[in-house]
Length: 267
Image 1: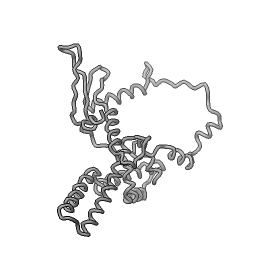
Image 2: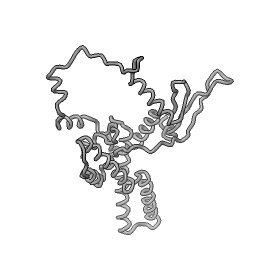
Image 3: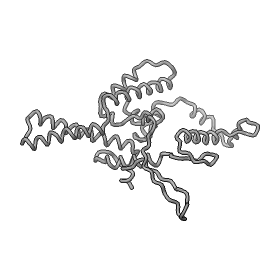
Image 4: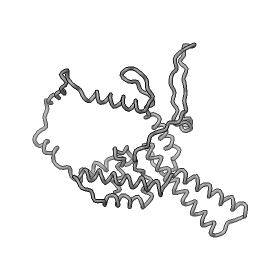
């Protein structure tokens, strides 16, 4: 099953109507899913590049006006823009870099076999490429481990294949390909699916009475004491924030801003 999902990550199947048999035929499709532009996600492998820290510091030093939370939100937005551009221009696609490097290494090794050896400069070049290749393999493992959201196993033993399979399977299970609306009609259009989901939750979380006014929430029988009220409304201390952030798994799902807990621990 894992091998099939890795070869056809966007497969899906549906039941066809029974016509000449008492069994429903299954239609399996391997059509490739074309997603929209993915949202920003901070990549843990960027820690391998000192330049990523400079990007964060430069964005954080930009003057921003407004209250405290707006300044934090705005600087995170500036950071994400700088990191996205830097990743595209300097880091590039790790998988393609590995493939290109392996071709260069293979060419030098073939030259060594054919000519009986390499010059000192060529040997140094080969050693440099091998070291870079090992570094890129390490980054590839970090990349897939973060996307797999697997917490019970750590990177470090070249678990790239396992993390990649876990990522593909999780994406396939979480993808909504079709949904039935309130009229019972099945739709596979992404925009229609989004509207149906939004309408569903809006209807569930906005209850109204017959006259159109919002329902009053009944008062609870048990109320908090004065001391508890003071504790709830007092300003949050830096120690409480630090304790909360450090209690989270570093690779857990990031918030809407795209930054996981490990980013805030590091910077």
